[in-house]
Length: 465
Image 1 (cartoon, rainbow, N blue to C red):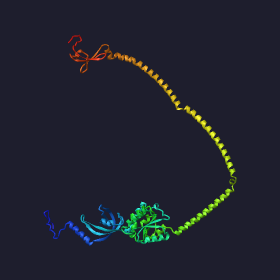
Image 2: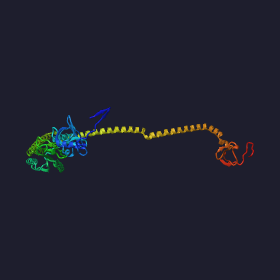
Image 3: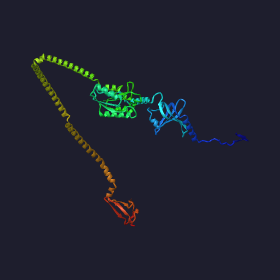
Image 4: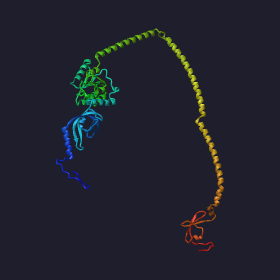
């Protein structure tokens, strides 16, 4: 009870409970044990969402309906045994154990088995794989190969102890006894059957049989599942040998039926497709022989009639007359041909003369000669013009050269004057007062120069110093 005194609140001391205090881990583990022992294994129907497969191969997802959801995990072992692809939005029925993930304290269900809701797992896997292979074009009619008319070697991939091989051999022996049958014995159901069927198809295809029968007797979808395996379907599609799929009874279809070049409802029907009836073949040969004999008789009669008509013809009665007329026509044609050839030759000769005259006028040698003459005339005129131009330029330059020579310092030096520079600064000496005894001078004369030293200095009045 809380007491209030003069504005202060007094809180009584808390009494420790008499029961045991649990840690969070202990409480979580207790809840986990209660769920696993009380609820245990259950079947749950829901929709898959947030489907993720970790690198470890375990799948983590959520099962939900319109009101609730629960975390779920499916470990790698059970996941690899699924026969249908799992995706978000798939309605499933799951069997698993309800437990608690202690790290987060979340309750979850560990799934051990998963079935699609409303459709069996095998049927769903069948439809999914059929859609995939159909989209790749494995069932297109353009890839179907025709069956040989009279095969000599027939390959059979089936169980050596089943009814299928007995039915096939009975039909083949009854219809065409001299055909060779090569059996590749395989299992036709179970986990190892698909691999053996693929090996049989590839071996007989490599062996070089004329046609191949792949099949077995009827059964449930589970029994026939080996012929729905993707590797079996691809082996049938990739084979170069024509293949007849004979799996099950008339109401049973497998993916091998769609990929094969022809589908037979039963193994016996496949054998009947491979080999035609001997009597039917013989009847067909007899009919063809009869037609050929009638055609040959008609051809002989027609030829005999044409021969009789030819014998009564004028040409055959007087062949020398026909030869004489042909010789006369030949002579006429020869003369006409000679006249035409002469006329043609005359016309060609006239055209050649005209072309030669035109070629002489347009000859490159003539044009080169004319070009040389024009060039020489232009060179002569150019030389005359250059000579006249140079003479005019010389006449203009001569007075200028005379003036330049008159004003040139070198001309003044030539008249006996000299220029002196004081060394080493090379200062032009304009007065004797700039010099001292023993100064070096560079003296420029009219022709040449000398270097000398000052030994005596005279002023303007010629007084020595």
